[in-house]
Amino acid sequence: MPRIRLVNVAVVLALALTVAACAPAPAAPSAAPPPAPPVPALDWTDCGDGFQCTTIEVPKYWNAPDGEKITLAMTKMPATGTRTGAIFVNWGGPGDPGNASIRTRGQAIADATGGTMDIITWDPRGLAVSTPISCPEGNLQYFEADPATPEGLRSMADAAQQRNAACTARYGSYLDVIGTVPGVRDLEAMRVAAGEPVLNFLGLSYGTRIGATYAAMFPGTVGNMVLDGSMSQKGTVRDTAFGMVRSGQDSLDRWFARCAAKPDCAFGPDPGAGYDALFAKVRAEQPVVPGTDGKRLTVGLLYQVVLAGLVDYAGSQELAEQVIADYRTKGDPSGLYAVGMAIAGRKPDGTFSNGPEIFQFVSCADWPTRLTLADVQADADEAARMSPRIGAFAATFALTNATACPPAKDGPLPLPTEPVAGKVLIMGNVSDAETPLENGEELRSMIPGARLMVLETMGHTGFYRSQCLASAAGATLTRGELPADGTRCPA
Image (cartoon, rainbow, N blue to C red; front, side, top):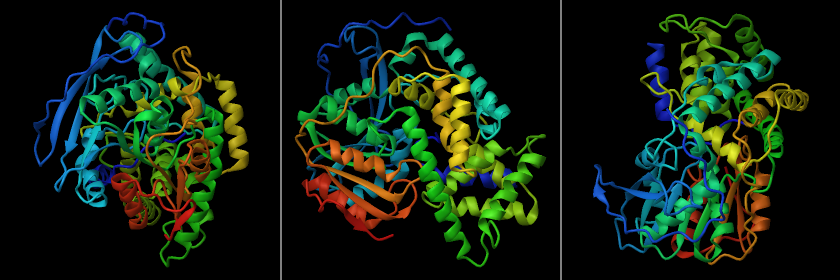
């Protein structure tokens, strides 16, 4: 499965321009988790540009709340008007660091809510600066591999095993609690420490899974929630993978149609044929990227550029078309390489974020399915039959991680079927390659009283692309006002 996260286009563009010019931890206790211990109030301090920052200590193992602690980093964008409460926000992933994202994405939420609410976010456990794990072994191999070939799939599985082995050696049983359920218990501790009587929450992409799991575990303290671009709460890893195959093909068809309507389509006058020729050329030649000391553009990295085009987030489709056109017309793979590496998580200094590790181990925790390479190859073959152009890529990023997991500790995620205290608005796009609309429909059917709002466009999540959705989200979060179920917003 492609990473369920929002593309940081500013970082991608900066990279494109640049290139173009330890002992194991003790076993986790297994007793049933008792109620959370009391937590001290948060001590916020100024951290520049109008933001406030703090940290909170939470149990490393929630079933041993008096034991070892980990530290979570938090950031707040204070209300600018008459304060009426706070909104907690998660932008997705798993692997999007909230403390960085709020500085570029927080203002839109403040605008939608009229500046009346504090906006609070955090780096979930293990990510960025919240008692992080760091196991970059295998990252380049994983993202450079071609998932549409048996050799590439073996390389991906080997890379995932490298990451698992390195992380297990360094962090031991901490990996068992890098997942949504312990992360939601962390969120509840943050809510209590912030002094908020209920949890008002905006979750995008993977953030919808955090919100849905919170609603399942703590229905009585759900405030107003907006869940945008839903993951399936009850689907298996295979359900998710094949849902993304279908939605990925639909989004690719829509992208081709959109491109074909332009006089200078990046793929050429016949987008499908141009796409096929592009992949055939890169697969055959793996061109050397100028100025990179012999690095090559691979099909695996080209798929990352396609992902940027499919999610169409904050200019990512235009950027993908720009670098595709540059390669087709000028023969220079620099832009494609830079965007591919940036989408894969490479930072400007050449190191990787630890998003790939978090993605792998949260997936392992949330989906108890364990697969063999033969299982994944069979599923990749089926996905390729369903969608020759995008199927193998869409399916394998979740499935391959399931070959390199710690032993399964928990069952499926809890389902949010109990009535909640507040109002819940679910939003989705008619064509979303990463989180199909069917997931939002499923979530709406589970949460009593929830309503669904649909944006008539392609792309991943809608809050940041539609004033219609942003206004409705603001009304829900600030006043508990819900639109009619099934309301549709124009593209």
